[in-house]
Length: 408
Image 1: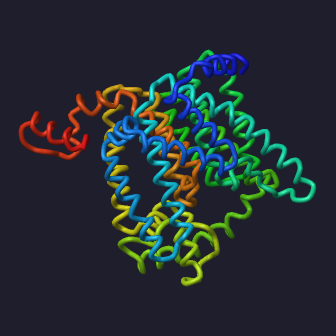
Image 2 (image 1 turned 90 degrees about the vertical axis):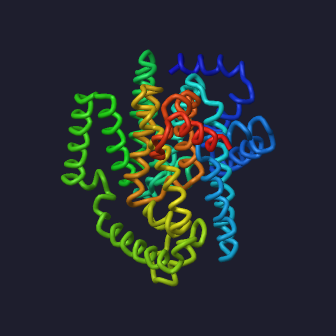
Image 3 (image 1 turned 120 degrees about the vertical axis):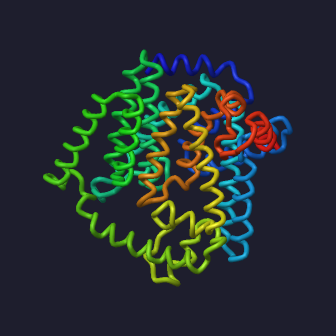
């Protein structure tokens, strides 16, 4: 750990704007959320007011499509007096601008430094969670520590990302594998303390995907064995995992939430009602009181409607195609595997919760996504992107049309 810290501090002495801003972004995610909000907003404004930074950031394929889709919910929210939705709309837009900026300046060395910074910061966050749990244990033994993340489930999703980040660094920086192993162990203890069942399932699937793509089948089998033993112990000794006994009541709440969300979607089908719409409709449809739909797809449809969610879906589909092209051509394979594992965690966790829709968790995922900016010029110019759109006709002409469109 000392070696990693020493190299990190030595490197920090030689910084430029395109290094300071990304490092400030990743470190801000491990402070209270308002620090993250201010940092994301500052970097987004800096990007948009600087011509060079703005031009590079908006070169991201289909970035302007996504920006257009995400601007509309601000006005939709205003129509329904959804003031929280208006704030969320601006924050989501700022986070996406930051992601495009990061993608435009990302290098392998910078990305790995950011991952190391996240690993180091996670240790301090875990220490805070331990203190929170110890301080409240006598009064409230069932208290779930939140560390710096406002909600135990947000902390759980951060841990999902942090564990696979540490695994990625074990593969790419094996000299420090002991440090990363300690980071994994500490964060797993944090996951046990915050007791997020959705995070446990998301982490299980993410790690399995990571090992599978790395072709580490023995590690995959060992991890499955460990997970199976943990599940057996949770059934045999429920006192060790108190929240397992609450699955029935928790699932009943989810059914009530999902029923109300579906009715809300049907009543505002095309455009939704803007972010945080569930808080506007749960009383109308007699749903369980909470902040969101506890399902990523339902939340997207309720917030953005069919048109907005469809636009986001198209963007995600294109990015999955680009990721596949990067895999096929062996470009930054380990980073691609990390992103695929993180996406798996988001999808699996998103079945029962929407924890990625938060400034700290969402921005960390977007930082992982920014790794696709490395060698992006090669991907866009050499890997025959017209196939993404199934263009017909003469290949060179098709490529020219797509390349011209992507750079508008």
